[in-house]
Image (cartoon, rainbow, N blue to C red):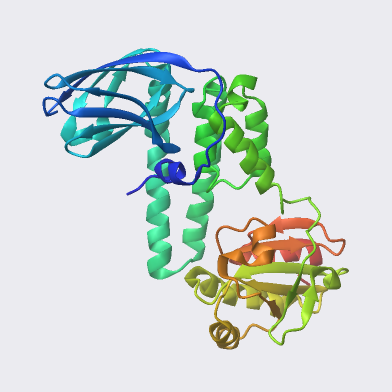
Length: 360
């Protein structure tokens, strides 16, 4: 499977680098063709080759300057083999087999040693996450699956805290959080860990990336005021979030084409029916791009609350404002317009409403 940290390489934007330095890699790769071309590139800036050389039989020496300690690609041509290495500016030894390019062994690079440690600790979590996702896609989300997911997130967050504290002076620490915060949504926890890192790490490529993601994630965070928006309902009438002031309102991001959203709709409906007489309502924000399918899904799922959409798919103006990148998601807003909970699914929604509104 593609690991989360590999997917991360695709979406991190390029930003400025700091102090550069020199490195030297002496490599011996079993099965490498004589006079192969060897390239070192930055996956976040793939058009810029950092260093290149020609192999002597199965050996090579690669020299150059690294912008900073981070993840790089080493490629071998012919063969089209490409490996991931977390490098720093040192004299580094590299051994491996061209047929097992993702299992390169490096000596002399503390950064890569920490990356290997990262893989050993977190790859089992990624594998478990993939298994839970597959089970949810096949059979839908049930109570036991939801509990297993919560346990995974809790364990993953604890492992992240421990790993970041141990490596607070290495760029692997923000890299780790930038990877797992796709699952760990406790942004306060991530920010606390980030602030404990050294200034050099905070100002690194991954440190700056993590800082930007923290700032984004704090939009719509628990305890913050809900951002105002106005969007048209199914009849074209503009509806403002502020028009619900004085009530508890669940802003529910969903779409007709989203399987997990449709599976969650009965839970939202049950909560609505139970608490609508207790100063509670729901406001659905759809990321649909087809009006007919949106209207049909509302009818099919018997959704009784106000629904709004601009039919702009992932570019829905409200979703963009709240940095929504996955659905289903929801925000529970109190009568004063403050977000008091988020992503309440299954029985968690009713439990929270019982806590706030009572269940008698």
